[in-house]
Image 1 (spheres, rainbow, N blue to C red):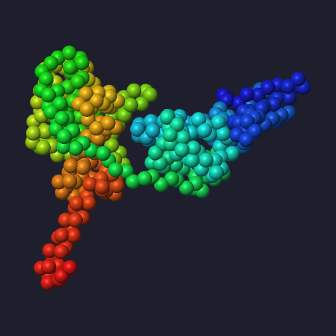
Image 2: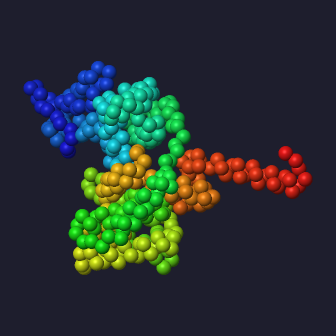
Image 3: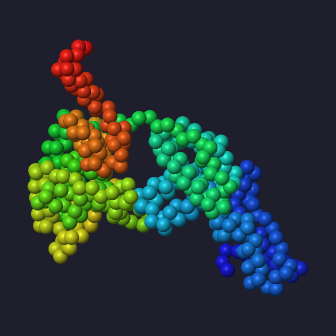
Amino acid sequence: MSGVRVTCGKDGVWFCRPYLGTNALTGKPMRPYRRFPGASGEAEARELAQEWVNTLAPAAGLRVSMRVGDVLSRYIAKIEADGAGANTVKTYRSMLRCYVEPYIGRADVGDVEPYVVDGLYFTLLTEGGRDGQGIAASKVVNLHWFLSGAWRWMVSQGIAASNVLDSVTKPRPQPREAAAYDEADFAKLSAALAEELARDEGGRSAVMRRNCAMAAYLALWTGMRCGEVCALARPDVRLAARTALVRATMVETPSGLVRQPKTKGKRSRSVSLYGETAERVRAHLDWQAAYLPKGLDARRLGVCCDADGGFLRPSAVSAWFSGLRDELGLQRGTSFHTLRHTHATWLLLQGVDPKTVMERLGHAKVTTTLELYGHVLPGRDAAAAQAFAEAASMAGGTP
């Protein structure tokens, strides 16, 4: 029976002193002591000790501590085993490493009160960033949902007596406004991407550069996320129908690159391709056939792939685009994701209704679209006022 250690005392009686974590207030280890005089040998002593330990920490099983950091690690491992998305697992581990471990990671779960979590949130909002500045309130909100789910699980497992997050008020994030490229930057970017996609060169670096350019082109003309573009496989593109089926995203995890299918609220969606966009994709696939290694299964190739035919890493594509941005002198602070914002912003400015934009971008709710891009719609409100005035005039009303 692994995990429980028993020792035979000088008087021949077996005893156990398990480690159950560290008291966050005193800083001292918690090591209760119990003797088992009725045990006839080590095996029976271990069995009795295990039963006793289970009453002290039923979810810990002694093999792990009750430190917040350790218990949250177990929670993440549990949801990963239950099928949580790779992106979710990656995000939770990052939150644990950056926002929890440095502050309350060593505290015992039982010592965490609502005021402790409130203090954590305040610290993160005021000085929790890498440069000593506060992190965005939206990140703290995401942390709140992670901790709330984790504590709810702890209660179900008997690790915590109650969900302390129920008594903690999450911060209210400021309204987000997505930045987009203006016409001047769009013109420079479009010309640069067209030049890259017109290159007819071989070699690993040239193949990588052109595929990154195609990824940026697709993001700009379809509004796909970087991970979605990188996960786009050849069978997902129907050039005759001028559509692309977005049904997966590429996620980088400690164990490698994962092509994660869309699930639950992040359902697959079909994105229409403009005629010239479809032809640009067709030309790119023809170019790939000439420069990629022979014998590859086309059904397993990405529309945007590396020199070996494998799916691109989103981090590599983002890094390439950041270099292009600096080379072209585009707006500072923008990134690959700005291509998606530009696509959505220009659609709304051209009068496309938010519901259609929501579906094209893959947002779960139209409120998300309006929250991000509502600032580009004031002109439409003026048009609505004009329309009402015209209707009122036709009915004989006066302003």
